[in-house]
Image (tube, rainbow, N blue to C red; front, side):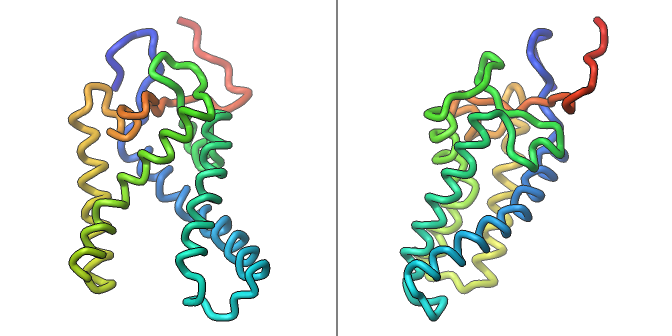
Length: 172
């Protein structure tokens, strides 16, 4: 859905969530390499040792990954699903805006994680809480005028459909 003829169309919620899930799958590789690097450099022998330092390290690594690729327009998953991140005028986003988008994208997870921590919710129930919140957060995009995710609206960014490289645009 799009409200202006000069703006690229917003990908469907189904396509954006498929991209989101694929991004999560690809992040396993990033976590593996970063976790191996952290464990080697810190000489951590037990996974529970230094876990808060590892979490902070992964937060920074994720930030570098996403800010780098978003400032270039797309992550690997976004390329696969022909989705691009742009600013509200349709231009490429700066690293500063990508960093803001990264910080705000934690709204996908922080509310249920905070509730789980505050109320000491056990693992399985916490997982249900997180999955439920992710579904609610995704569905809330239906209430945005351009059907964008709310963290994108707050960051001044948009997800738009993009043609694969080498695909000619249709003549108007």
